[in-house]
Length: 573
Image (cartoon, rainbow, N blue to C red; front, top):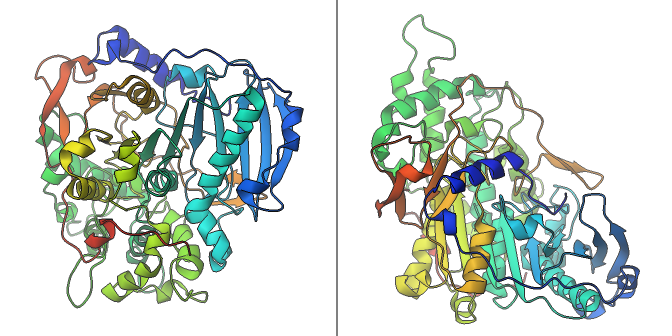
């Protein structure tokens, strides 16, 4: 079903772990037991809902139809808020438990995706207990021409999610005759940025906000980070240097150097900050070739990936962090193609942002040859920092009204460095004090997990139930059970583009020659604490892990953009 998180295998694995007594999850608290509320008007009646006060003249509902094709009957409402913010709301007719869930979208958005990630096994979600809504953020497709328009920039930056929530809540009141009791937002990637933007700009919109792998540093992320990764993997003639067939050997060498640093050899680098690795150990010897070794040019690319762009004069880093040790297999298709000239997500993400969105004035004629990596470019990105970036460390209003925030990030994420999220964690603690932050916020770092899920580590988890337990019952989360899933979630994943408004994912990637890890269940704990293997028993079972010491999981470095995580005043254009 569109608004169910199915991932049935992950649910079965998690259920088995629970019945086996894994961690503290056996008796994990849940949200309140709320009565089911039925509609008081027909679905068709919602077609006449006046949205002018929310979106302006020309806003309205375009359709309201019953849909029970996915097993749970809903009133499916579609509409537009001026100028071009499209939204969709699913209102259950027989199962609504007085909760509202709004979900974000990834990449540059451009379509409506009603999926809730980090919700594996959430009973309320699976039973159709939420009204759900999503928006396309004010444009269709992955091109960036909308960035040339003041209003549509604002729609993408913050307005579309806010007014979609207002419209959905109005429809709830009209359909059920009452407001929702609790409202939640769940997003990953740009959806994570959208989630944080809601907490920072509109602290009264949601009671609980879940932000996964947030693209909160939008300006730097989609220019200097991905632009660098695409640029350094090309030679002078424009050919790709490092191809994906070399990644298994690289990843194996990283594991050989660093896998045991966390106390167990399990095929996952759980503490990347403790890793000491030099890709030169894979240098091809005289006469050696093939995928088991790296050429000098390939070694140089790998080093530049880990190190990131630096100002050529001062040597200062230009990003908060880069991909971490242990993430190598996840580089495939992002900045390491299967073949020369093959798909690289980085080359798709950067051009529309660099040309039409990030800079003032816009650089509409820029090509890849014009991408420059220096402090001057970083400073030029500041012009729209207070519009697009959701890095404001001032969450006073959100905390004061009782809002709860859960951040999460996979340590194997190739798209967005976990260093960004850890930097934000440290920034809010500095701005608000650690004790106060601990009262309303948690950060979970998931070993081996890629962007918004997948990867090599156990990535199926249910943060939505944990959030409900916190908001509705006052049970602050500690251990969260994660499990291996055979299903790749598309939640929050950027796309290779869109066609006719339909979501178009990246083409299939070549299967890399690497052995799969065994299925696992494992707890994760709030930052800075890590899971520690007890030393006996099957390491793939969560019951054999416990809460370890506070640990520097992600290494941070000083850089001239560190102030981008400080408190600031948002701008509207």
